[in-house]
Length: 262
Length: 117
Image (cartoon, rainbow over all chains, first blue to last red; front, side):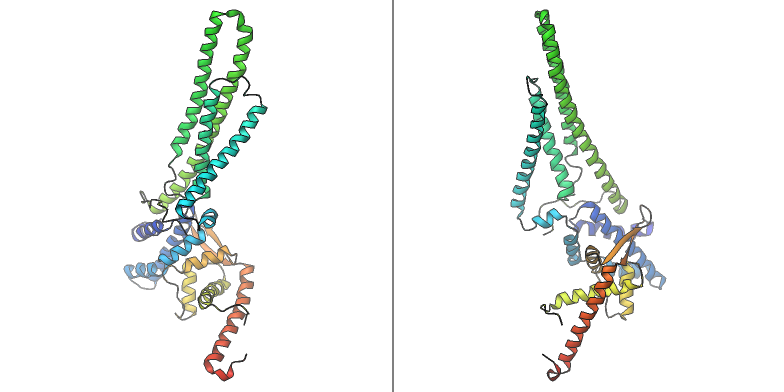
């Protein structure tokens, strides 16, 4: 962005952005188009002999969308999900989203549980396997909710919110798995100290049980970490593009349900 | 005239869309150029103000009647629009329809005796 444009149009672009309740990539595309057109049109007016103030004023008057045009742009670019659920009240929409999230998470968990049963991992499991699986289910719910918010609902008022808990959840799952293996190892050592003759039976049993625990913990933590990485990368890309266009610290209108495109 | 009900607001919107499409017959243009060309070729009769051009452009793009393409490097991107083959066909068909509506209107304005059922 040129220095002239920063002075003349950045404030206007920020104002327009505040009134566009759209996903950040759509907002950026609209604002980039507007920015170039404003610069080119004011340049054209300047070349025709208008004063810089008049050139800018006339360009703004011609191109900056009023509330009606912004509303129309909002409807045209609204994500499919918002268009499909536009007739629902905010309360009903919230209820629908929560039910859908719980339902999808439950479906994925049932599919995972059947895989675990088929793989014989739940036969004689470590006492830490269920807490690891429970934390993994919570992590899965967080990842699904974030993906839904960013890419289906297109609610980008605070895109980086909820990313740290995903990373922390991944770490917690891994820590729980490793902690479980260590505790199981101590318990095995204590039993073997009392009755070393059982080593031939208990040690292979421990190996199978705790390698399963560790594998599940590592897979869940990796999946959560990967999801965090993808979300973070995407958020930093779109936030970078937004900052590049609007300068530092563009204020964000909080998403309060009323700025939803109807 | 077509059998469908005549809607004045929709007609005004159609006219705006046709103005944009006809301007793009000369070749690809940026949004501000389209606005300027419509204004100059109609001697100021038609003018897009307060950003009314953008919803029209984006709707036409959405309907596949025009194609928007970005050019330029990372920070200095600009969008130009060009007419698609569908847009050209649409323009021809709608021009005939507008001609028919205007001729009917003129008949009405010139006197009831000249209006044919």
